Structures are given as structure tokens and as C-alpha cells.
Length: 73
View 1 (cartoon, rainbow, N blue to C red):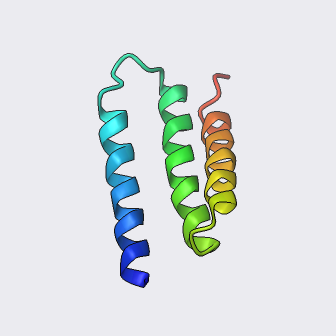
View 2 (tube, rainbow, N blue to C red):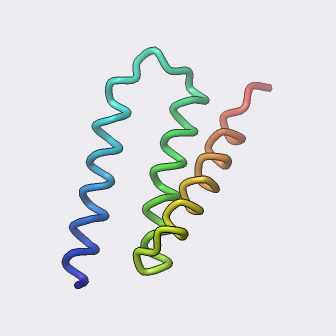
View 3 (spheres, helix red, strand yellow):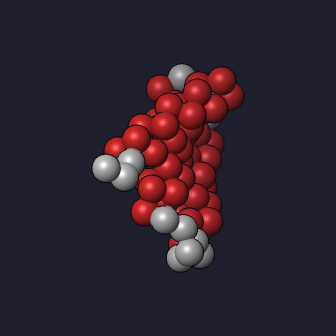
């Protein structure tokens, strides 16, 4: 079961990296939001043992944090 979780997390990271690589017209803040959501989703999944609610919650929190970090002054 651990191998499945590790493979799933790796696949999610690879998919997010591939999805964001084609976003050259995104602002820096948009990229930070997407990156934060990806990292938060993976972290939420790992911390909750693959729970859907944990993954979604982590993605939401990570996206908000990424958005706020890159907020224009």
C-alpha cells in the first residue's frame, strides 16, 4: 500500500509540474498560487494518509498561501 501512495504522490507532482510548464502567460502570482496548491495537495494527502478531504484541504490552503506570498505590494 505504501508503494501505491508513493507512486500516486510522484505522479501527482509530475502532472502538476507538466501542467504548469506551459503557462508562460501566467503572472508570477498565478504561478505561485498553482504551485502552492500543488504542494499543499501533496502535503495534505501525505499527512492524512491519502484522504480526499485532506488532499483538497491542503490544496486550498497551499493555493491561498502561494497567492498571498506573491501578492503585489
